[in-house]
Amino acid sequence: MRPREFLLAAWLAAWVAAAGAESIEIGHFSKARAGPELPQGWSRYVLGRPERITEYDLVEQDGRTVLRARADGSLAAVIYRVRADPRRTPWLRWNWRVDNVLAKADMLTKAGDDFPARVYVLFDYDERKLPLFERVKIAAARLIYGDPIPVAALCYVWDNRQPPGFTAWSAYTTRLRMIVARSGREQAGRWVEESHDVAADFRRAFGEEPPQIAAVVIAADTDNTGEKATSYFGDITLQDRP
Image 1: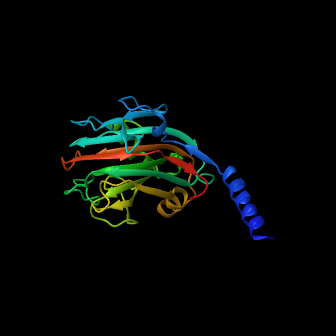
Image 2: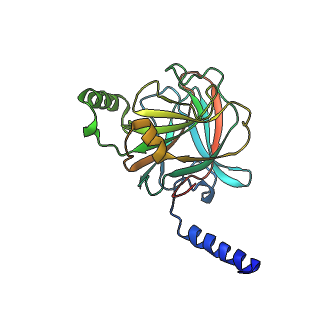
Image 3: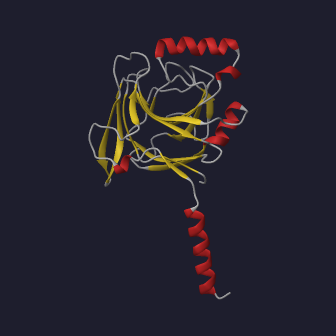
C-alpha cells in the first residue's frame, strides 16, 4: 500500500471508530445562555437547612458559557439525574477551573470537609444488599437531609492538601468514596481537563461491579471552614473511551 493510501485508510478507520463511539451529554452548559437559569435537566439541590446557600449561575468565560459556583461559608449543589450503564460509558469527562483553594480545609475531618469544586457520581445501588444497621443509618440521614443521600457514590474533588490520586472514605460516611482529581493552587485560575474511569473507580472503592449511574452532582461548599471560593465547570460527558 502506498503511503498516501495508507494514511487515507488510517483516517477512515479512525473516523469510523469515532462515529461508533457512545457518548452521553450531561453538562451541555456551552449550549445554554448566560444567566441564572440552569440548562434543562439540571436543578438546584440543598442538603438539610444550611445557613447560607452556594450560588450557581451560567456565565461567559473564555468565549463560552460555563457554570459558575460561588461559595461563601455556604453549602448547596446542582444535580443532573441520568440513567447510564457505567460498563458501556465508564469515562466521565469534564473541565473545571478554581480561582482559589481553601486554606483550612482537611478532607479527612468533618470540620474540614470543604472543597472549592466537586463532581459526584451517584449510583443506583440496591439498598437490600447493605447490612441492617447501614440501612437504618441511611434512612435516618434522609429524614434529616432529604434525598439523594448516596447509598454508593464517588466524589472527585479539587483538594488543598492531598495529592492527585489520593482516595479516602468521606469523613461523614463509608458509602461515599472521595478521590482527589486536582490539588493545590498551582493550577488555580486555569482550565484543566479531567477524564476518569468511574467503573474502575467504583470497583476499587466498593469491591464489586458498579450498578447504573443515577445522577451527576456539581458542588462547591465552604460551610465548615467559612471560607470563600469561586469555581467554574465546563461541559460534562460520559463516554465509552477516554
